[in-house]
Length: 80
Image (cartoon, rainbow, N blue to C red):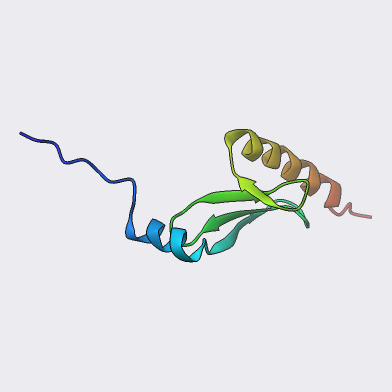
């Protein structure tokens, strides 16, 4: 029995390669840092310190989780 190879390319990835990704905000880390996901192919990217986007790696995801936790505690309103 012959196995069928799965192609790494899909119609949606071809659309992204041709027209570019359609990123939508998937998570707001702080007021200035977001994580984005392509609505077509699912590629994940995040803002970096220079203001551009880079591929969302495990290291960056962990740093964003820590930053989001710190930011939430910093901006939490303290009852008077």
